[in-house]
Image (cartoon, rainbow, N blue to C red; front, side):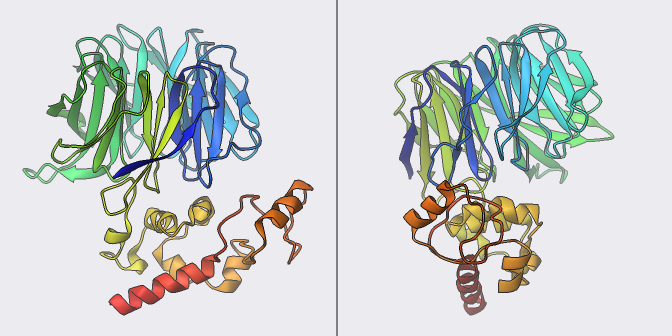
Length: 431
């Protein structure tokens, strides 16, 4: 079941895009602003809204670490922001000066792609914040982009209906006519699947367009072969142009938003419709799954963003409590640990654990001392109002230890050590 749990109504004009990090949600709008919210309680962060663009903001995206946010606009720029304090890090001007319609970080944050209305595409080096490579599609406006999971390739979609594949040197590898009336969005699943024939590991790609259709594709990325694209199927659930599509983190679901005002969630393995959500009153322009929690955000020309939560018993973005038990804790990846934290209502610690590369083995070795000394987790409980008053006086130290607080985000009244101990006890009983 998908349940509407919150509605954000802070933008004064159409919502154009929304994007998740492990701890935040960013939204952007025709009102020229980007707003950033905490996933802890969906309150807006103190530095939000971010202002700097002089025209409509079309797209925003987080770097994989979540520490950097990029936004692009009709003003011909892509801006880079520090999500820890809202500081503007760079203003990247599209060489042609054309309105920038889409931006995306590569999986390792090495590059940032910006695509513009004149068909120009720029690959920015994120270390130097300079142009690394640039190119152009033959016809149409560039409106969509997605990276391969290894970051060596990316695909762009244009208003003329083409999907174009590039390598990380900006060499055009192939071109596919996908949607007769124009591509509007595309996404590539992070999880590989086998073709069942030759044992190759393909990735699923979805594209949607003005033709009311969503198409699913299988892509083989190989450094020695380039890109091999196979058409899989077409999903025809919408009755009007489809403006947005996105995979869940585990690749099991695909969400789409349309001019018909509906949001449809599909099961990717079968193409079956799991949910149809029709709470928006105007065109649905954007949709995104959270990476490590069962949340979905949908944005609309009705100026709102709806936040939906899934029953953890169903497939959802990220690993679930059910399938965690299939893998021993020792074998957990960093992403498995992040998914488990979210399932335990400890999503605020995801970024901290990822920064310290905590996988299953490291998790098992955590002690009270390492939680306090290495991860700098306070470990004490306070009355919420008293702690808020403490923080409001601009004090960034622990009331008990007087040590600096790495984050001012408050979490529920249960210590991480207790949660880990309870979980590990259940694992030992099950085994």
